[in-house]
Length: 196
Image (tube, rainbow, N blue to C red; front, side):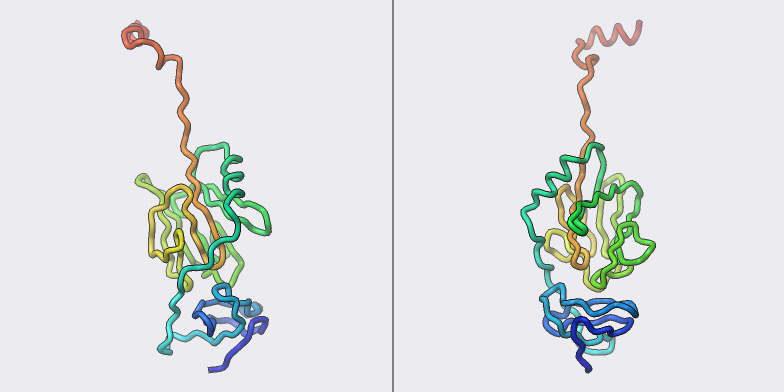
């Protein structure tokens, strides 16, 4: 099978790193990147008809100590659930307001990464009454939560999701209930106030 190196305009298709089997999908005008998994620069065209299948391990850990996430969390003033990630050196905060949030390379994605390591339909974040889940939407490189590849997983505050080479964090800001003056009034007085 013909081997291609990074920087080559290889055409539309899926390519597998020779060094670590990391899978990259390209559009016609995309050049092959260096491998996000191992940094290698040699790829072969991936095929469903060969005996080799990608065995992607855990992605490389995110660089940094996470202090930026704490700073972003401190800047969120409304209760809710959010996906937080860094893009071009800036923190992006995406509030999860709908039941389904699509993550991928497609123009229809709610959280879009124009990156060949991300599938067009890579992952879904689902909000329901019993919690928030992430689902792998049949992606090539998989979805990782806290370093473990998952098909689906219930998310907890602070969990790290890896989609392609992008690290996202799930942030759950609970609603803070304040104390009302009425709560401090003895129960007998509350009953009289309510009944008149």
